[in-house]
Length: 465
Image (cartoon, one colour):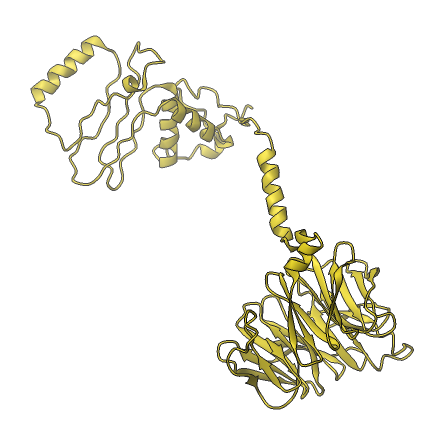
């Protein structure tokens, strides 16, 4: 999308270079700046008549006009949540607008110089920075209008970065660096530490005023546009230029990256916009790594480090309480003295304890819902501990859907079993049911192991360790 002094906004197909649909227009006033909302559904524009307009992407129509500035609006910027818009005007003020109701939530703030050329939020939206030129405060040269940092909530001045007059601003994604483009004198690009507000470095190369700067979506590349008829790419990490300048027929007014950072659009004073293949340029000079997303690289690095980290042995931090395995009752603690021994957590714990000890459950868990049977199959007396799983888990209960045995047959088999074994009887619920059911059997060694690991919490220690 482009805006123009002809008062229109236009949408273009970047593959064919042809215009998409009709131009967007609201009056004849030249449109000086535009910005896309974070959700991509709206566009805000600043015009020479002092109006800030909100456009709907789907219809291409103005949905709101915010009037307040008395001169042309040169800069507009969205907050990250899309609820506020910051504007800077040639009337020497900055304002913040509520997108929902169009009211001014902050300002007008008198910046202290005649023209506000840039007004941009910090990434965390706690501050915003302004830059401009023209008439300055008493005692300051017109060529040395400082960058000013403001508190978003109060509108109070936080810092003033003295130096040459700056025409454009950009914050790095982490908020640690502010970058400015010079309007007069040395025509440089400067970086500032936002913790100390001290000047850090100078990026030199342009031979005339720098009109626009923008940082790539991954935060690795800076692009700049200048009156010297060129646009340039810079490596933000070391401040060095990338490849040769991108030459135009006339002064370059504005630059912007595509969403993936692989293309760059420039607006030229010859009434044309140009699209540049950043990806090809970086590959040509061997800097294709600058296309990578830093966060993705950090996540990848963390994943690799975790995968390379040696596996740590499991440590049991809590000792098993005394008499945990012998079937004896646990010592009562003061905070458990009033606990009902029949409550569910207590019964669950007792059931787990009995499983570990190999004894039959002292309390059976009643089935809920569709559960129609519960089986506890203990070890028979004298059966070797390393018996096969099939032997240990041999079922002793027929499904409720099978035909029941006669009472006499059941009694005879019960007496025979009692004469050959002293194992405790099996407790089971055999009520017939037409619904699906769950049978809980005696767990194997691995199940008991994991129950042991999970149940040794501090709540059940005996207080002596």
